[in-house]
Image (cartoon, rainbow, N blue to C red; front, side):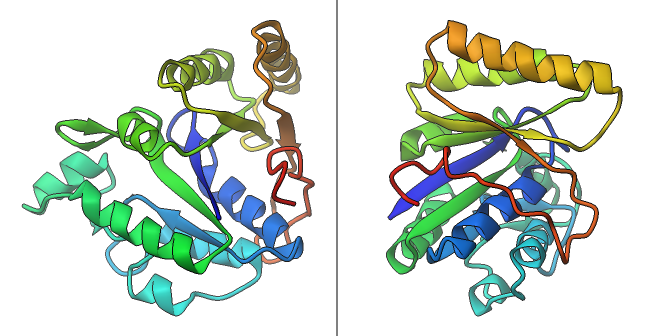
Length: 229
């Protein structure tokens, strides 16, 4: 069993699409894999990001999705989980999230846990996502992109992960959104060089642009999952 934490360099970095593509790759590699969310805001029925994962995987919603075992907390207002919970006069219990993930770990070979927003989004007033994930000792997959500001956000995220002594399994460079090709191409190589110059043994894989969620392009993520596939 192996659990990975998928975090983005910012909100709307494309974590859900990349998580779905990662899971699709593992499924095609004949691994029994499941995706999960720590919490989802902006919806009340089924976690929208879980729906995205399943669509990209090519399988429909599972019973454990409908039972909220892959996303134990749903909130209506689209904001940070800690604030969304307060607006509904509810509390997020980190242990409940942990229990759900541990149950999935007993049932699946690999679990991909997607965060909510960036690495430092608060789950509660006293617990940041970064510290929760660090406590779980999960290797991290960082979702970056070619938009303006991605160099800064990516390197800051890497530094925060290293400070917590977490292993970086890889960086996925998301092709969406496409702003200016000159920025996107240069930013990718700046990040690659920075990883190399700082002796960080983590691959950077460029994910293709996904235009059809029901027929996404296949991507080889095997460098991220060394020892698993």
